[in-house]
View 1: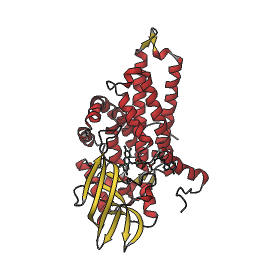
View 2: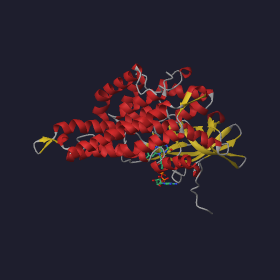
View 3: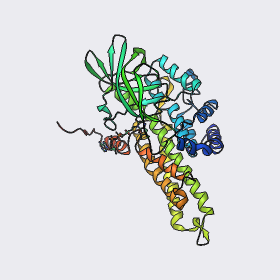
Length: 395
Ligand SMILES: Cc1cc2nc3c(=O)[nH]c(=O)nc-3n(C[C@H](O)[C@H](O)[C@H](O)COP(=O)(O)OP(=O)(O)OC[C@H]3O[C@@H](n4cnc5c(N)ncnc54)[C@H](O)[C@@H]3O)c2cc1C
């Protein structure tokens, strides 16, 4: 086991750190206050080769290991959570599913859009009546000849209104029969595909969380990424989503590390009773404990990334348990670390003049989006007891 980063990985961290300080941090409040998408950061990251860095070389990418993308995400998140999320959506998420299970044409198309056009694919799973109970989803993709007709509604879709590529989870209907959940690509602008409410979210406000509405939206059969094939299609899609979970954990970790660093610097300067507040042992212990949490979370995230399994097409996807552990643990401790870091700033931490209150709002999301903390524990409990647990109420 080698815990050292390569020279190239150190370069990624240094580059993102400099970008973060100079470009991301000064504007992070703007995206939050104006609910504005950080397009300029997206373009900058694309020019510097950080979008789609995990895309295999055969599709025009750099074919970098997942850990390289994780390092970039974690470092960017120290300065701006929404900018770090751009890196998650363009290295994991829908991309992971398409690269793992899509057709050659789909892989080429999605890779081209990310690398050349700066597209940020969205992944549409959640519905108003189906969140944790995702298998209750009602959206349908009905086969009609060589086309599919999509109907239904998705909510809380990150980047929904701005993404050209949308991977939509739907129930496949063929000859009036439900064939199970699969995934289809629906491009922005396809007739029958419109947007509903954009949520007024607590944090991460620079990225729209939107409702996607499908009304007799026709797509060609070539847009099917994963067929509804009993429970197999859904399993594939969930497996493909593991990369996103590890990426999201890296955003939470970066936000917490950023807040922790700010608190350490503040505590050395801020005085109470004639001495720096870092002199007080009670506060030192809180920060020392935070350091342990950050390092433990980092190890879980890096392990999940490094152990990622190579699928055909050179796609790396983490294992479910390792991704869930990383997401659960990081979501939990990151909130605590940011909260304690805010506390070290006293009233100033509660003010919008410093980034702590924004980081606190941003980091809260990571116990909910991408599968709640409880959903991660449910998945892990299956492994612990080596059996499935049914949650559905008996009829
Ligand atoms: C900022 C943000 C971005 C998002 N982005 C996307 C996106 O891009 N694409 C997408 O498809 N979705 C997205 N989501 C939706 C997200 O995945 C869901 O919110 C999440 O899966 C939980 O579903 P729910 O909100 O319906 O909560 P519910 O399923 O209603 O759960 C309510 C509560 O009950 C708990 N609970 C439910 N069932 C169980 C159980 N069996 N055991 C224990 N506890 C349980 C949950 O953990 C939760 O605390 C996003 C959400 C947020 C907040």
